[in-house]
Length: 406
Image (cartoon, rainbow, N blue to C red; front, side, top):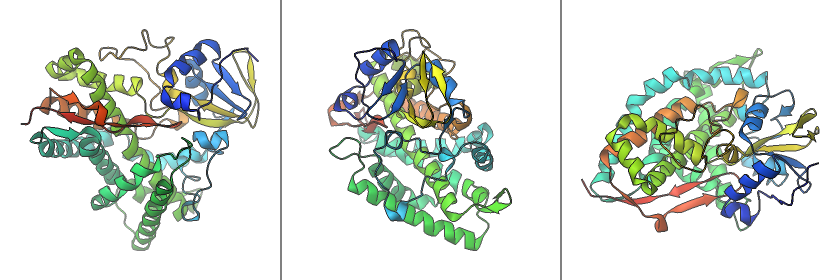
């Protein structure tokens, strides 16, 4: 095992305060770092994670992919919410994963994203109309999250009038207590309330039938290997799509607004040439990826950098580190809307690549483009912003800005 003086613990206060110096050292000194404390490996370089993500022969996801699951510090879920994620596609290996994903994929493909674009643009313009006259607004709470939850509900087939209910519960789920990694009581209660609502809705939809051309309809109406999905499995996948579709996009949009506020020359370039907006959003996806890490369990021995990862051990992919790997991205620590990186790891890779990647890009590009067209000049009120910093997520959960009213 390679020698390094580096001590890395993703649950430490040092990591939460600023993980990027640690990521740099891991990439340089210990690209396959082993923690005896957790019996877990950490991969930090782009090419290594790109390869491992595509390898479902040596790694299994069915023991859980969340950092607290891999590290063995996960709380027991409340009885009312137990099993909520266990049978979702995020917790399945092929071939079961492939079959369930195939049911949902048509609702997230590029053609589906294009169909959703007019609705997305209409929502964004409406929210910007509400913001524009005030001279102050919150990029996350007033714009991005209101958009993302409504698009997620539309895809899944959930009532739009429940959007605010979902946002309030989802906003609490990733809060941490004084340990820095355990979910708060409010977060657990939010899980219970949201899953309780979904349980009742799915049961009612199954009784009524005809859930329509929606992702939930596909889950309700289809069979896999001659069996219908259980209501628990449907709830697991619906909750995964709802949380994933609502939570992360606002962090990327707010990161783009924040970074363009730091680089007014790059902001001016995007305003002058809206054709730069997709590249700017891509750079925000790379530079400020919200999800720091997810993982697997080793299924069969895998060797890398002279190390042997053995069956039963955990492995965590440090995605946010990989997205700043100098071996993949020249001058990786610089935010540059002209970069146009051909590949990033923000949506993962391989069989478990993010199902909603095409929709997320569509939403993000429309949000950023419409925002800059309507509010080309703004000041980020950073001292009033709220940033989430945990082992799982980093990003703004509130980002107020000030701008000339219009």
